[in-house]
Image (cartoon, rainbow, N blue to C red; front, side):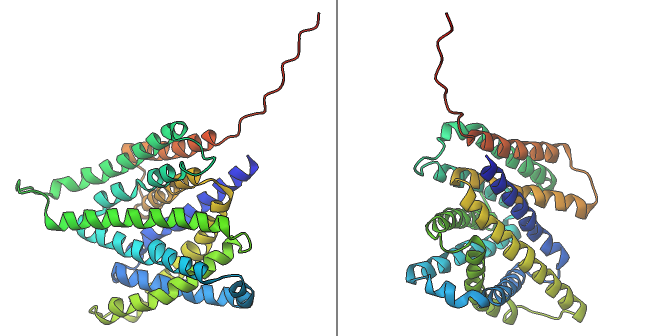
Length: 323
């Protein structure tokens, strides 16, 4: 169980790093989500190039065309496409609906992982999945209760904007699920590449893709920001690149090598958990009853999943009773 708890610890810290992403729009509210995404991934790529440069020849020699192709689609699905779909879903459909849809990432990844050879069967993970889903529903209910008062229905079906937001949220869910599963399985194949180096290589490829994203993000968007706004923007995207992308991704990859995919899925809950905690600190308030229930459910979900993966103690042969 020592390896399991080390993996869980890596997952907790990775979630703490990724939770910072939800603060970025508040810290740099003068910029669009697309600009934040482009800036973050450009900075991620720059730092990744600098860190991977000393080992570039060695790493390149150990990677073939299939590995580079895997890095390309993993970078696109897990970073560029996911963030773009997520930001669009939040802007068009609202945070409540988006959080409800994205919150089912742990369920999707865990169910897919249960099909792996030797994985814990789904029936043993049902308590964990139910607790996780309940926690996400509590978060969604809390968000919806604050937003339904301003919604007016005319009985003519789902508005186009809300339908578009829903489709983008579902697309983000699918995108990151495929990334999480694919990334975990590629890490299992590449024993000669460290988890940290795989994260840096992902950063290099993501940075190259972000160059294409930067064109519509900055050239075709009206600007007129003051110098102070640009300095704040640079500080935010640099912080996200170092903490969320480099440190967070490296810890996530390390965790993915230590834990089975059925447990990896549950670790995604910590991103939501820490995003909530950071939100409380930012708003300088205590959690509501629903939010506190969500925190308890998320914690219980992870602990229940860890317990389901605990190896059975070896059975000892029963000795005959002395005469």
